[in-house]
Structures are given as C-alpha cells and as structure tokens.
Length: 322
Image (cartoon, rainbow, N blue to C red; front, side, top):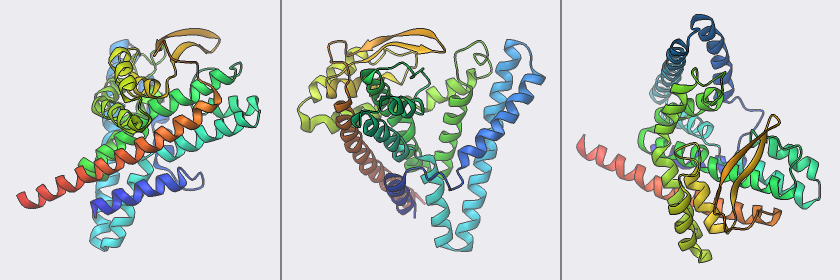
C-alpha cells in the first residue's frame, strides 16, 4: 500500500500538478498560521519572547497537522483498504510541488518564446520574491531557472524522501515546517525573531534532501557529458547562498547547463547582490529554460525510482523484523 500510494501520488503530481479547484491542505495551514502569528505578536513583545512564540507556532502547527493525518488515515484503512489508499495517496500528492513548479516555469518559457516579456515577468513573479517588473529576458530566465532548481529539493525530492521513509505523516511534517519557513522565515526586522525557529528547523530537514537533489541533477546530466562540470561547480560554489542548502542544487544545475546564477536582484526597490554561482558560465537566455526543464524531468524520474526502491527496502526489512 505504501509503495502504491507513493507511486500514484508522484504520477498525479506529474500529470496534473496542483489543480486550483481542489481543496489544498497548505491553504488551510496558511490561514491557521496567520491567526497564530497575530496571537504570538500580541503575547510576546521582546526578541526572546518572539523566538519562543515562533517555536510554539511550529510545535502547535506540526502537532495538529500530524494528528489530522495519522488519525484519518488509520480510520480510513480500518474502514476499507481502498479508502485508506486513496486518502494516503491524496495526502502525499498534496505535499508534492514538482508538477506545479514545472507548470509555472513552462508558463514563463511560453511567454518568452511568444515575445511577451510583460506576461513572462508576471509569471516569474509567482515563482520568486524578487521584483520582476524591470527584468529583461535574461533576468526572467535566470529567475525561473533558479526557482526551478532551488525548489526541486524542497518541492519534490524532500517530500518524496520523507514519504518514502515515514509515509504520509512524515511528508506532512516536512511540508508543514517548509510552509512555516516560507511564511515566517524571513531574515528581516519583522520576522527575524518570530521566524527563527521555523527557518532553522527547515534547514535541518532540508540538509539531506538538498544534497541528494544535487547528486540526482549531476546523474541526470551525465547524458550530456557535462557531469564533471556539474561536479566541479558544485564543489566550488555549494556554499554561495545565505541558506546552507539552496546553493547545492543550483550549483549542480548551473554546471550541467553551463550557465551562471546569482548576481544583482531588487527586493522592494533595494538591490541585493548575491554571489555568482558558476561565474564562468553564460547568462541564462530563454532557450535555457527548455534545457533546464529537461534536466528537471530527468532529475525527478531518478529521484522517484531511487526513493521507491528505498521505500520498498525499508518496508521489507520492517516486515522481516516484525
């Protein structure tokens, strides 16, 4: 059942991504976190207090999310194996974001190839937090590709890994922390303390997935004959990001594709200079998005196959031990 649910969830994600009309747990989670943030700011006023409040938000939210996963899945399996399988599949599917990420990047590529830079900027704005209104074609292409490979770890490989190891409950735990980080984990005066615990917890949970994703990217790029360049750039530039994890998949992909990431970006009219990843590479152009999507697809397939094998191996040993 675990292997079937994982496989069905992955295939659904590949085929339809994130259908907007279906209820998505992350949307409900976001509304709950907004309410808890308001309460925490009322109760805690000092930096230390806000850090405690942020930790409470993580523990309470994760606890509720786990309760609302474990109990319904167990009840569904008691009702009927098919009911349990359907619910488990849906929960894992809801934790995956690979298909949705691919669709957004495809939209950017299509707009650029049609010559509609304004629409491409608007599409890119759904992927990144930087200001996209003044980006040229190269800037939009870089934004889309950076988002594609940075989020290949936390949007696809990480939830697949957690689901393979611990089933839907582990996938939900990861997705909860990752969502909290995306909502609270900003290094700003407003969120630096409140989001501290969420950001650090997300860094810990993404430590292995980000490195595993970089390995998958290099293996996926072996057919192009550039895996050595991917490995070289990864070795040299994996630390060139404020996050301890984000540069790993970006560096591997930049080396495989022969392009550079990083540089100057604007956030609310303030310029932020990020170190260049693969500074000898070319500036990304619209044609590179298609190459990047092909690399992402190969990475996704490698990740799925290897993690299904891992899940099968773990379940086999569990059965033998029991």
